[in-house]
Length: 61
Image (tube, rainbow, N blue to C red):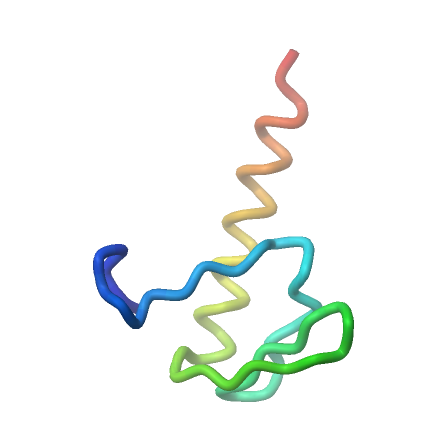
């Protein structure tokens, strides 16, 4: 993981990510892949936190 000011920091659109089951590889919904140095566990945890946040703000109102 990198600081938001780091040129190595990458932002991914939540709805485009299919999974990150393979260590060091992210799979997108269009079946393309992207290598990464971040562990699959870290990516899965970030996706989980994002889904919780989206759910919270979708339920408001």
